[in-house]
Length: 114
Image 1 (cartoon, rainbow, N blue to C red):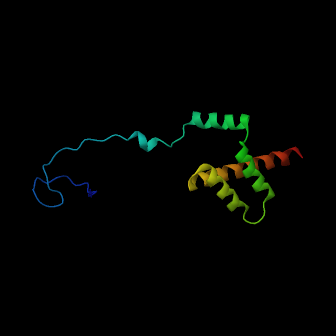
Image 2 (cartoon, helix red, strand yellow):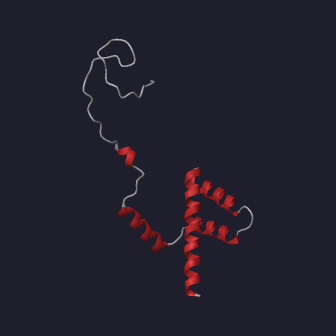
Image 3 (spheres, rainbow, N blue to C red):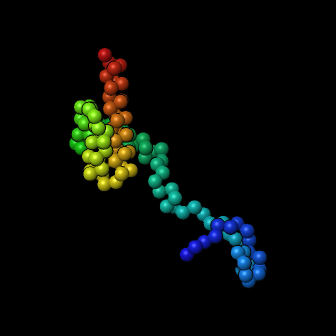
């Protein structure tokens, strides 16, 4: 079904783009699906705390090793491995960035102690 996104009201005329009986349109609230992926402050904090306490999972450690060994195409290898484990392109990119960020924090902590 094709819909016109025209904000003009109905004219009361039976033909044309704005045909139909003139009525007052009521406001439709936001659907819950629109806010589904949004993260609350509490959830973000809990996830950070859990990851800090538990550490990395085995496949995340493998990603970290790939990053540490480096070499040409290490990011692509990390992406391909993450995509095989997680299933989608977007999740793989997100996980790769997450592991790179964790590695940066580890290096920063090591630089401060030495």
